[in-house]
Length: 161
Image: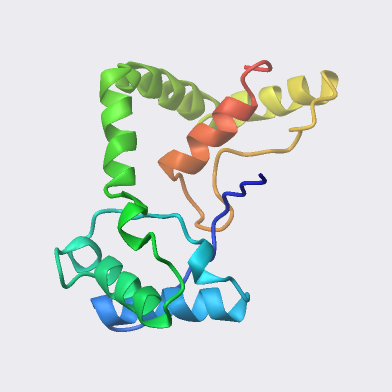
């Protein structure tokens, strides 16, 4: 048996994000990629009310759509995980990561906010022939610091730092 887990698509909503909008986006994504919905074994959500509301949320509408197709006899055995992002936040609290994040932010600020230290760090990376030479903690897409991007870059530079 071959099991694949992948992110289907990022969809930008303009205007509303009702349960029908979300259901429509999911159905359109699966149809455009020729994904057979009878093979769907689970849905992971962020726990937003329009998605998870009992009997009227987007998940219920998606299940109703699959049932209407007659494709999945095990529709009630599907895996549903709500609040994935909240679970990550819980892990951060349980693992006492705020202290680690404070240390990472302190090091990032030390490197990025001082032009001399930034140049010295870049030179150090060049001497090490690091694959991350020239990498900045500042996100070029947003022109500033974003916690997730900064921490990912910090983690990638772990050995060098």
